[in-house]
Length: 314
Image 1 (cartoon, one colour):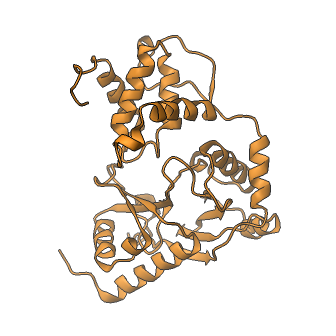
Image 2 (image 1 turned 60 degrees about the horizontal axis):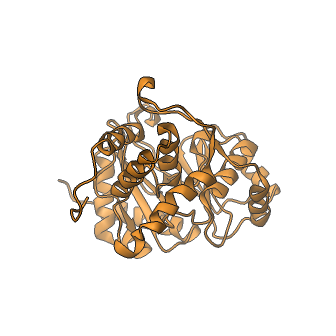
Image 3 (image 1 turned 135 degrees about the vertical axis):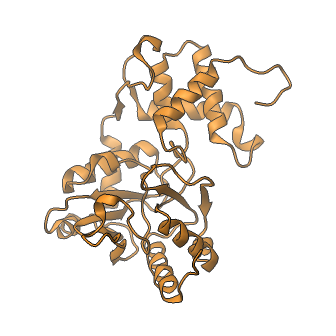
């Protein structure tokens, strides 16, 4: 293993510091995903700003980045949005950042993830936001400014500045991976942030397709579409009823997902609806799971087994 060079470490530290200063928060969630396998590096965790800026941790991230892992981040507020939404501009229209400012949707941070591709973070609320409200806002901004709709949700991760974009398609003619660079960084709420939130509150509830990762013959009869708000409410009603936060200071949400699936299926809920409840209600879904559909298949397969005898732990 080669040692990290001091100039590179310094530049990465400065880039991370600028990004965190532009979108300040108490905790950040990092995910490292390999560009070839698309599998996340085990050990996903929350980081404080001080931990992210620790030289030993930055060296670790730089080594993983050189090994082919892309580094992603977002401010983390457990099962709520932290007040920031991501706009992924894979093919930005010329002048799009000026248009955003003209409409009062000033980004607090703009990254160039590779030549011609941008990511913009918009600070839309000084406090936490319900997931479905943040998703409505993210989708509205994506429609207005030509963002990627697949990236428009309440907890989408963006890239971390100071590391390279390891996607093979982004490499230059000499085979080098481009650096993720800061184009603009200035902390602050967008001037029209409150209007965005108010507009989202008046929007019709989000709807999710009743798609299932299971073969059609395994599905229960499908019910009507479920809104994101309903899915979130059902999941967290279970969490509150079972006193998960009080019993488990750091819950393993994969286990809670299993309990919720078992409980709802035992009540006769349609499989497709239960899947939507996990997708929309489970905190930070899909978390470290690189293949959400495969994760759901395995969770439902485990749920088919009976509960352990009384007194045993799950």
